Image (cartoon, rainbow, N blue to C red; front, side, top):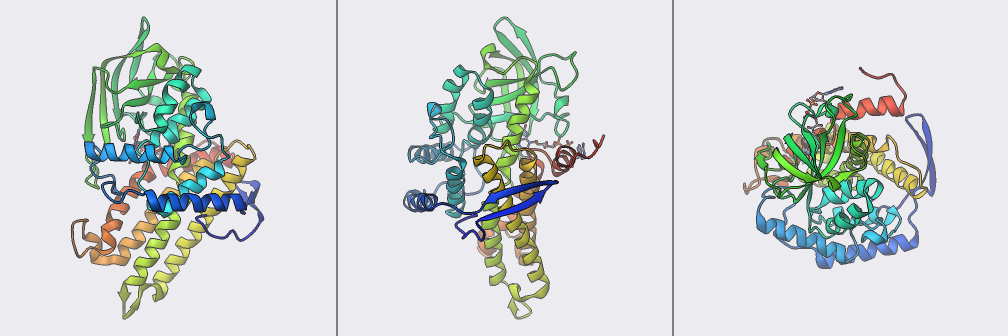
Length: 416
Ligand SMILES: Cc1cc2nc3c(=O)[nH]c(=O)nc-3n(C[C@H](O)[C@H](O)[C@H](O)COP(=O)(O)OP(=O)(O)OC[C@H]3O[C@@H](n4cnc5c(N)ncnc54)[C@H](O)[C@@H]3O)c2cc1C
């Protein structure tokens, strides 16, 4: 989608048995807006100190810079453009936000440090939160004053999330929380957690779960970082030992958190599959292949690797059209369904396959890490290859997305 000229004004495609129309034409106002964003980014992008890897994310200097960058973007009008005005948004249609996202990827702009709040909790609170919760939390998500993390997974509850055991008992005006979360991204610097807790252990497992907002500075919370194969400490174990949470931090009704949890998961899956990210990675892979010589000629002229590149490009194009279709649906007010799962499944697997192709193209050079002068393409690919595998799992594995698409999209019988 990124700045490319749309090829058709209107098109119809069929996915999961449903026919869709889509608009592939940006208006002249939208194109003018794109140029405005592009020139703002050219002038305002931080030049150093915010690497595009997740390394050192618990470092205080990095955190302060990352928060300042999101705040600057917000003040320039480029964060959460579609949110309602009363909570700090601009009530614009989603096309503008998608243009900003594309341009940020194109410019290799640093990632928004408050992405979990912006992409997951914010939209959930807009639909499900009380007025008091919206007023209290949404503005600070926009400015990165409060960073959020997601407390869903537990040692015995990942794909089967409804088996979670972290217990919250009501004592007076408070919940008292005991238990453990795991794989909690960003918990080491988060101020708040949106968390799933069991409030009725006697009820069937999908009931009896509540959605609560927990201040990470409350006594009784211990955060232990876990080291990933990238070498980063991106996610954590979080332990709760008699942690007191005010009852007003409950989102929606007691024991009815499962439906709210799914609303957040929907937003997460949409966020994780990014069409413009895939397009950028493909262009980077192409440049790499052009620079590598095999048998006396560039890899792009090797018939076998060329075939592979074409197959990848076809997948990049497919997800680009999928993103345009989703955008059209959003503008027309259609409630998104399995499209978010398709996005997550296809986008994350494609990104990992792009990195795999780059690793194979580099051969022995793919073993060289960031600080090695002989590394190709600034050793971007080995890191990306490891990191992208995590995103195939995080937010629900590919198997789980396929199950949901089969059951809800294709109306196939349940797998179990
Ligand atoms: C980089 C990263 C960041 C993460 N960040 C967070 C976070 O911030 N907060 C959070 O709460 N969680 C986070 N997670 C956890 C993530 O949501 C879980 O890892 C994921 O849901 C899978 O759960 P699991 O690891 O327990 O694997 P399991 O559920 O044990 O799955 C193991 C394997 O079995 C397969 N499988 C399981 N059930 C089925 C089934 N019914 N049908 C077919 N196959 C099945 C899975 O696909 C997988 O291959 C993160 C994970 C990663 C990798």
